Length: 173
Image (tube, rainbow, N blue to C red; front, side, top):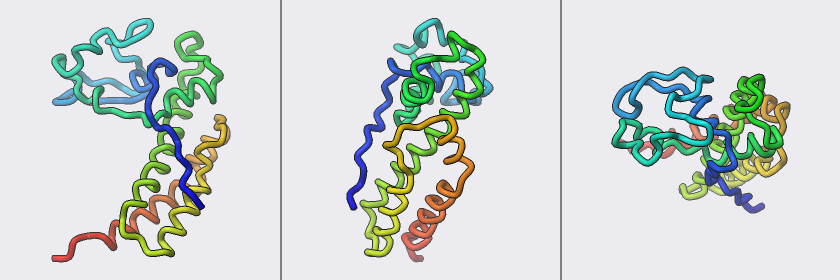
């Protein structure tokens, strides 16, 4: 069984600035002010961030470091067929839920993929590959499939597997 190769690169031009709206942040070293989730950042204009070229200088280094792992464009293009909260505000909450679940699905896949670089036993690698296959990350996602993923047993199975590895790989004192 081979790992599924997925392009987790964010493609902001195919998104609807979901990270700029859906994610909360606290003012401090990485963000210039507090922002609640589900509320558009005050720097978000009609089509883009008005301070994108100066994010770090303006106190928004956290924006530069954030990576949605390609979840944003999949939610907009695949789940909502190009529709956006921008033209239909009633989509804000469903898009937020889908974005959160897609990001988790992509993150779980990426973590399992990264675990291949650890010194796994044959049984551990087989379990890792089963979990990867069970994620169905390459399948077309819907609001229902993402909700089922987020509330179902798969995220817990991934976390439990990774926790076993972490406990085994801790340095001994």
